[in-house]
Image 1 (cartoon, rainbow, N blue to C red):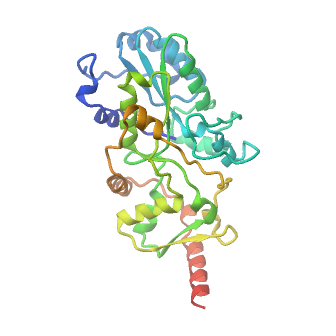
Image 2: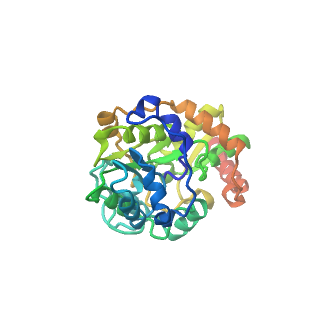
Image 3: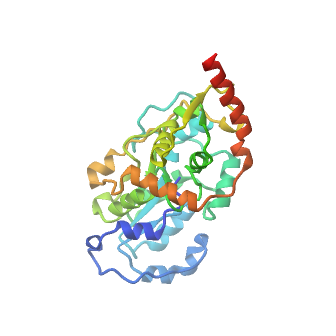
Length: 332
């Protein structure tokens, strides 16, 4: 879920007091293939870092190679995982049969029993955006390798849907564009509109990573990272609209009334409500950036860095037809 956290965001999140064992060194860059760390074994081990943070682990094989290479050269590895390890993810996407998962999702909630994390077409789209995501993508296997290594301790952070400057998935763009296009209303299919999922502003997520990396207590632990309240999709869009100063309407429609491009596949009665109390209680994590400021920065970045537009995702003619019909029924 994370995808775009940068070294710059992490550097801002780590204070001088956090670099307590050694003076802060001049950053070094080693260019190479993520899948061939062995080619740079000597150079990586020579860095002798206190802690290694891996932002882009995709598969168990990658994680195993990392741990084997760094054993004896660092004290701990912090690996970024995702809330998509939970069985609730599989229920949503139809890979896990049976009842809904109980909420909230804690670090001890049931994990997926199936290898598939996302539908194949979704994985292919993600691979076009994130070159590090390989065909064996599965954060469950990543976690097993990070936490199960016999010689090198690990810490796992299960990240939310991360938004903010640099988000190559442009999560709030569809809302921002409709606001800027002065749409009279923004439409949601009712099940998707009510769906609750974890969110995190990029600099706040970076702060969570920093606090885990600089706390010895986090060794061997798993932490959920997310905003305290898991907003529904309509609630999140409402927050974006409020910060943007938009005063239009939100229309929540049954599936048979919603335009095709608004209807999304999935079992949306399975919410992804994530409990992030462990990292707050054990490590004292607090978001340094308030939600309104995070949204404001996100809107500013989305406007300055719009993605390529898929016309089918903004079928305003279809939306106008539904809006007109709905308002006619109300006034009739």
